[in-house]
Length: 54
Image (tube, rainbow, N blue to C red; front, top):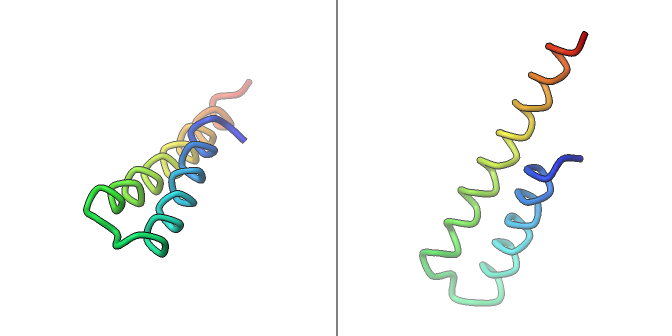
């Protein structure tokens, strides 16, 4: 598991906790957006490395 995927998963967990424990202000939902983006970026990078591997 690379650092991008790990960071994305941490952000999604923080978003989930923040949404249910607090009144979910706007910046909490930014964690959802960034988390999904980082997970997708990590998957793209992983696929690119696998495709260009000799």
